[in-house]
Image (tube, rainbow, N blue to C red; front, side, top):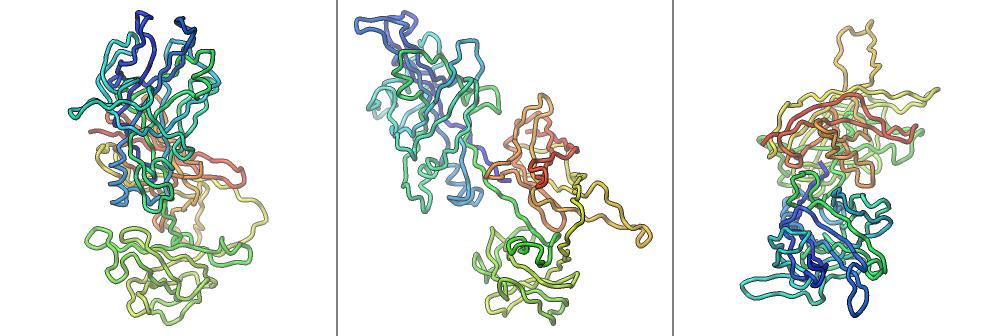
Length: 486
């Protein structure tokens, strides 16, 4: 699946607000163990000889970038440029005044800091680092912020903005440019940046304004609510669209791009995917024939032989168009120079036809290998059998027929929790298409990392597809329930 979630490793709130006496600012207060991260500006609560001033609070949060680097090294994360990273922080409802029509800006922190163990966000009685003045206290000494209130980089590639109209919205912002700097990814033109996290604050204008923005609260990493803790969510389109089961022959009715089909070769060796030794991650070559022995060659477009490429460990693909009247063709995969044939496969072709009336697409689905319970440590592949609802075989020609699964190229899914209807994975309809279903000749499938789900609950997965006529997503009526346990 094209989703991985990285939960915050540290967070806190730093503030220069007045303490309970309203005579001294609690700039040494620490709130690192609180389950809330808070951002506010309170103007004019206390008057001094210098006049009225603002009391400020800023959030600070850090994520396990080392885990992301490890995942990329093991191909669990795609290379830079093929994945987007989203900061997600969730509104914490409260009974205090909620500001409206404001922005929160997020900047990369430039000084290392430690979380601390303070809890008191009311009287500011807990002291320690991190706080308004001190970033870190260690055996080697105390690290002070260069500027009170936190050190940060306001460069546009290290800064982001979230807007709040009603005040109770969540944060969901693409922070890919900064994450790639933290990871010091290959080819990253922005260079590297030390991972000291993000600071969340009101804009400079709002903090200096003669009005209050009190108070915006987010759930912190210590929250009891599993799905409300701060995360960076990696999203990418991980789907494999293997047209072997829906291979359309070339037609003047379709564009050159629509005439192209993609087929895959999966090299399974003793139960695991492995690269072909003589190919590795290099090119592989494909030719198509009308006979199994390879005696009658079919010319492919754009070239013959077709140059295929490495997709991931043990998986190769080739893309081509085929102009033939044969209902069955055979694809043969070769080494460089066509000296060695690694595999011969079978492709059933489908002609492209025009219609006198617009078709109505309605589908029925079943999950053929669904288990009732999954462990939160496993990644499960769910196989879906999808067919047209009004499928009707010609009974006079064949009384018993196996129904072919229909591969829907736009198939996607969402998942919600049964107990309260909370959507735990939303339908990926944006540019990343991170919930798109894969498909091959046996049908559609999705790989689910069960560690993303809170244990002890049941969940429902629902399928959808994009209807080009309606220009909208259509949800299938079937629901597939499973439970996640430790």
